[in-house]
Length: 212
Image (cartoon, rainbow, N blue to C red; front, top):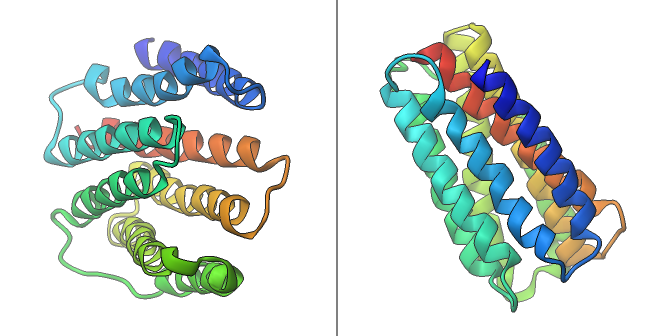
């Protein structure tokens, strides 16, 4: 019951965060954007059983993601700080997804590398001095998504599948954010970015329950 209530709260908070994002500066956005991530973070904490090693790493990743959320919504340009926080989050997720895995599968890397390569080509002309940080970030998040799918191939359980789709949605969310920031603003970017981001984090957080 607790997880259902949290999921309902995440859905409501996330939708309101999107709505307020088009009305900035508004205190509702600065409250609800991090609150949604906090509610997602509570899923592993309040879920059933003792938190596994996998769950502890996912919790750490969610914590760094919350820090990234805060940096990205602060006044002024904190994009690089936010990028760094999310970079650490993805590195921690990679540790979680590879924990206990004896074999890595290359097949899921192909579409993920295709998406990453397409992103690099789309943004190449617009990055300027941010080229190296963005390329590094794309490489790490691609590795995260790949390791999530590789884990599912080695351990085909529902929990692994949820995390794998979470990794892909995270990539899509960040692609939308990058296109909006570097290539050109488009009105639906905030909606698409936040909804895919919250869905990704929710799927990754829910996956912890099956590994506890």
